[in-house]
Length: 638
Image: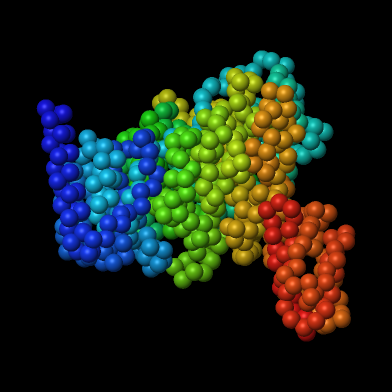
C-alpha cells in the first residue's frame, strides 16, 4: 500500500509540475529559465527543502500568508499545486520576522527565503525537479543533515597510579593562576603542555598556550559565544555561572516577551523541535563538552577550566545554546538546514559575536562547484549576516563588545583532504586537529582550505589521556567530565581564544572599535608553525593544516595592536616618521606597497617607516605582516 501511495503521489507531482511549466510559459512569453539549484546531494533530507522567491513574487506570497495565517500555500497557483500534491504540511519564512532587526533582515533579502516541509516519501531530487519549472522561484536549496565532529569517546580513569610529573613554573615558566586540581591541569594538557601527561611523553608547548594568555585576560561577561550544537547542560556545576541568560524573557510564561520571534528562549533555543527546552544527556553531551572548552568556570575549585571562563568572580564569557543536533546527530533527529540557518541568525540578533560550530557535512558530500553556488545559498547568507551584523544594533551602531562577528567551524574527522562544508566556505575560519605531540591527529581533515589548527586530541597516542578533557553529562543526567577527541574539540579552543581576545581588547573600560574582520586577521597572523611536526608518518600534511596552530597568548598581544594606522599629512619635500611597533606585534616581517610612488616615497627600517612627500596628491600605503594583517595608511601630500 505504501508503494502504491508513493507512486500516486509522484504521479500527482508530475501533473502539477507540468501545469506549472505550462502556466509559466504562457505568462512569460516562452521564458524557460529556471531557478538555481544549490547543494544538491544524495545525502539530502527527504521531506524538506528551502526556496528563495524572486523579489517580484515575494510580495504576493507575504500577502497570502498575512491573509491566511499559517497556511501552507504561497498564493502562486502553479507552485501551490506542487506543494499540495507533495502533501506539504509547513510553508513558512525561513528567517522568522526579525523584530527590531526586521529592516536589516529585509535589506539583506532574507525575507525572500521560505522553508517547505512535505511528505518525506517524496525524494528531494523529485521535489526540486518539479519546483524547478516554476519561474517565480529564484533558488532551490537541498536540506543536508549535519554531523558532529567528535570522533570517539573514551573515559578517563578516576584515579591515576602511573608515575607523574608535577606541573611547575620551571617547565614553561608560566604559573597556573586558578584553584582547579592538579589532575585537571595535567589532563587539560591542551592548554599548557609540559611535555609529560602522567606516564605519556608529549611535546613541550604542543598546546593552545592558554596559561600565558590568562596573565593578560580571563574573560568578560559581555562577550557571548553561540554554541551551535546539541543542547548545553545549562545547570552543569561548571557551566551554570557562565550561561547566557536572555534578560528580556520571563521563563515559562509561554510568551515571546522580548519580541525576537522565540518563546521562553532563556538560555538559547532548541531548533530541532522549535521549543525553548534544551536537550542534554549522556548521549546528548556534545554541546556541553564543547561549551566547557570555551567557558567552563575557572577558579571555582571544581572540574575543569575554560579558555575564557573568567577568574571565578562572575567575569567569564557567556555561552548561548543553539541546539541543532539530535541524538543521532544527523537526519531527522537534527534540525536540518532550516534549523542550522535559523540558529546562526538567532545568534547574531541576540548578542553573540562568536559563532562556534563543531558540526558539518561529510567530506566530499557536496561538490566544490556546487557549493560555489553557495553565494546564492541560504546558509552562506546566514553566515555572511552573522559576520556583518553580530554586535550591531538595528541602526548599525556597535552595541556589543565587537562590531561584526566571526564564524568558526570544525574541519571534520574523515581523514580526508576533500573540501568539507561549511568549513571550507571562505566566510568562516576552519579548524583542524592536533594531538599532544603537536602533529596532526590521525582522523583530522586537511587541505589548502583549512584555515588553522588547534589541539583536538589524538587517542591513538594515548587512549586515556590523549583526548580533550572538558565538561560532560553523566548517565543519571548530573554534571560530569569526559575526555574526547575530534576537530569538534579543536574548534572550541579557537572560539574560546577569540572570546578571550575580544575580552582583552574590550576590557573593563568597554573599549569599542574591534571588528570581526580585525579579529580574524589577528587570529590567522598569530599562529605557531605546524609543518615542523609533519615528518615521518605525518609527511604529506605540510601546508595542509592551515597557517599554523593556535597561540592564544600571541593572539591577545596581536589583537591589542589591531587599531588602524592614522592618516598622515606631509609637505612635498618633507618626511614624517611612523613607529609601526604600535600597530604590529612583530616589525621585522613587515612589507609594504604604494599605490602611487610618484606622490610618496617610503623606507622601512627597524620597524620605523619614513614617508617622504614628492608632489601634491593622495596615495595609499598598504603595510602587511606577510600573513593575514594588511593595514592601509592614507597619505596626503600638501
